[in-house]
Image (cartoon, rainbow, N blue to C red; front, side, top):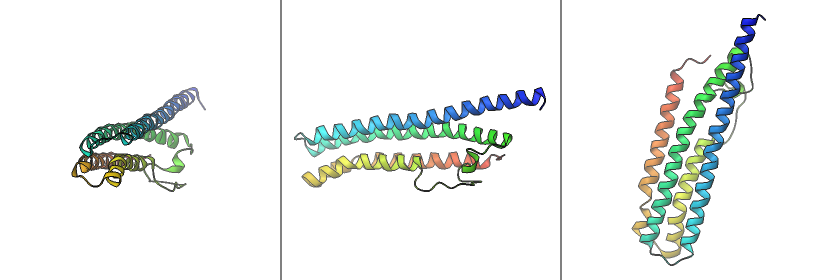
Length: 181
């Protein structure tokens, strides 16, 4: 291997290492921040459940929690786009260098050698968002009966979920147009 080839390989390996580190940073940070928000939301629900509060006021607390979690969902989708750009780059580098650590998994389900089964992390994000957002109103409904105010977080839940799904499709469409190495 000549010096020029070695230098190019070293540059690609350095970029590969940075892309992997960036991927792990973006993926783990969105779950760390989400875990804190989810835990805080459940604690707030617990505090509110422990007091006598009207269903209208409970609905306001639920709207606050759902809005906070909706912000996390949009943040998580933003970070997903960032780490997928890192994944695309390290996929390219692995192909160029003949490496297989991540290329065996394919990219967005394409060119897989090894399959991963079960729900994907970004789908679990949506599930957790919906579950925590409807937990409080559902519990209040079971405890005190139905009230229309308890449905007030639903537009935020539905709107955020649709927005995130559309962003995911847009991102996948963008990568499908790119030529894979």
